[in-house]
Image (cartoon, rainbow, N blue to C red):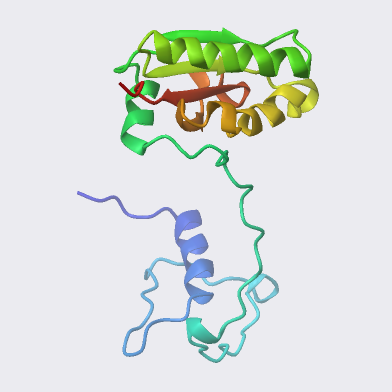
Amino acid sequence: MSRRPRSEEARLWALVAATVRPLPGRTVEVPAEAPADPPAQRAPSRTPAPFVPAAHQARPRVAPPPPAIRQAGDIEPGRKRRLTRERDALELVLDLHGLDQERARAVLHRFLLRAQDDGARAVLVITGKGVQGDGVLRRRAPEWLAEPAVRGVVAGVSEAHRRHGGAGALYVAIKRKAS
């Protein structure tokens, strides 16, 4: 059971209905209870704009989103989802906070080689976000993960989920050690 519109609602609907251009062969229904608007409040009548197909309309240029971390390749979507939902364990965690670039790079390489030796399949590398989200370690870690020294270790890299550090951390998938 529907209620009858109040006079204010009917008046507002009449204003909205006056601005709508009906589909061909259709009309806009206005409730009978709609009070007439005073002449000063009526919406000015406009002639409808000509129809232009969507293919011919100018589309505003939108800048593409910044590319995701792709230097060492992305982790497969299913694997990332399992890591995010904690169905696959993050076997080791490395925190690079407080290290300078050279030391952080060396520690990261040793960590990844040790993780592969230990049989780890996924690790978390915490770089931190840095000042105003533009930290040196955050920016350089993907480059270090793509270097030839660890190319045989790293299967993929992806930004971590918020609960694991978000933009300040990386999931790193580790390749199995060749026998």
